[in-house]
Length: 110
Length: 512
Image 1 (cartoon, each protein chain N blue to C red):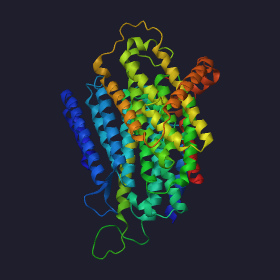
Image 2 (image 1 turned 90 degrees about the vertical axis):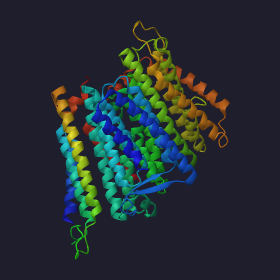
Image 3 (image 1 turned 60 degrees about the horizontal axis):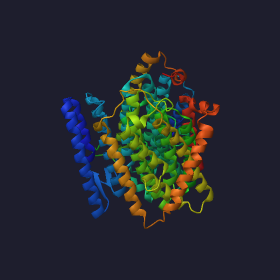
């Protein structure tokens, strides 16, 4: 229960910082925070209370649903790929414009 | 059927590894074979009905399932054709560049994957792969403008897809499976509705609905012209495809009114911005927003209007890519983008001008062209909705005005003697315009018995549109009023766009 609450708080923090972010890196970090919150929410909702790790042994009866865990691993991989590409682009943008401020970049015409 | 996804990806890897000019050209012929494969699959679905496959023979609850039916088959065919033509079009410019073809082949594979995917998580994954690769293709020129557009596109779309993930959590915790068919058994209570609303909102980000359309014109203007054609021909349609897949399983009359109003606003605003633009690609890009609104109006309803919307989706894929490819050729020849500076195109580049005119006739809905059929289907569907008829007339006139603005490039005299067209580079646009005419005529023959098209009246109406919009153009648009300049230079910052995105999602949840 606490985990779900924590995930919601993280989600709200991420969205708030997305709306106020002035810098590309700041926007990227808030994207990552939101994604972490969603992953945490998913894992917490789908794992039952007092259940064990999804490895088939003889005496394990109520194990956690393994499907969400596999899916969230994939989501983490996708998220890291997007983060890497955005970091690369922001390096190029810094070389080009000399700043990472959204306002200056968007309003400048080249 | 899963090989449909892997053939292009394996070709992509081979192209990358060999980095050989000859092999890059050979790889195009493999995609012709793919086209025949898809036609074979469509024939099979017509004779035996739609079929579903679970990859690896797992149980349907946990397995990755793919599904092919007539609707998916048509989308596959459109995708394959457009990719082939765009690859051929790019051959001259990006000839040396095997990496460009690596990304194009890979993108094609993942678009096929999205079209045949039949569970929510695979759809999410393929949409993310498509966003990544298309972002790389948008920044391919590596100048400041395209980098700006690329980072805006990628970050904004990824944030949009987060909401899809939240919707996924809700549906999964209700059903315990990712398979799409589980949706039809689900009871529509408040929580399920929120989940589906989140799916629709994230599809809205991909398809550029009203408050979240802002990434689209930027990306279209900055990308190479072949990529703009793919973006507005196929990639913008991804959101619609995922919405259609969900709509097939649930009773979506609940969402109809909300989506209809969003579609109307999108269509209207797209037109206003399109008229104010002076950049040739900018006009076409904002038109994609407005046509997206029209498609949304179509697919949010039932029966004949839905058919009209779906047909408009396909027709728009063809005519907008034709327009973008022709415009790209003109821009490359003249090396300028402003509609007011381009002069005497018809004399210098007659073939490209004719294909551009065919595209313009289709998009404005001239009788017998493909745009006419789908627009008429939507109009006929709304026959007892007076206001809607007038709004559709208004949209048509708006489209006409902006294309009269573009058509000014045909007149006048250009003193640049170097501008000449060669036949080989016009082959893709010629083929595309022939396909467009063929599609229009075959759609007309198919719907001829079901619907009374009233050809004579429509030709009359079309001419009236022409007269009205020409006078509007002469009276208001040509003078370039202050309001127009303001609209043209209007730029939405990233923070405001995010605020709009979050409020759009909340609105969608509240209204449904």
